[in-house]
Image (tube, rainbow, N blue to C red; front, side, top):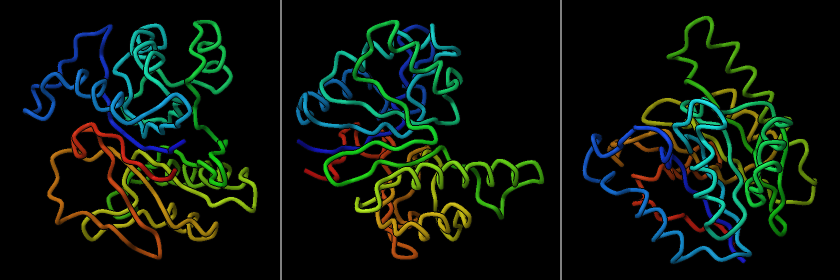
Length: 229
């Protein structure tokens, strides 16, 4: 058994959204995802997908992307990205996957999942406070509450891992409220996506006792990052 993280698949099997316009790393990226996934993920493994999974504008348009994931081995735990327009309430997401037999797909939304003695927690996240406008602060507060709800749902004895879409830290900036919640719950590992084509020199790898890992697909060559066995 193993636990992996991967973000920003940007699948578009039912809509015309080619990703190779963003550079060579995206050339035939769906085949890259499938090849690398099959090389390392087994049926008993878990893969956390850190947002921007499908370009579908609603659940029906995302269905073929979900079926692609369903046909790959392992349990998939999906959180919301800024381009996941299909995202809905947890009740509707679970009903949709049940209706279509998508038994390996699960959604991280104010809840938690368990892998051995680890708790998988997270939320989408949002902008850094220093870049936020007045309306953004309500979203930041809401995302911090959602992360707290997810972490609070985890068994106290488990090691808590956090998965976000937006970065918790980058260059000289930090997501203050998000990091505060992580520190309160003793989190030491956080994976995130969202960033593309950035210089590795601008990434913060450690801050406030937390180890950060950028797992956006194009950043790690669509090769799932193993976090635990």
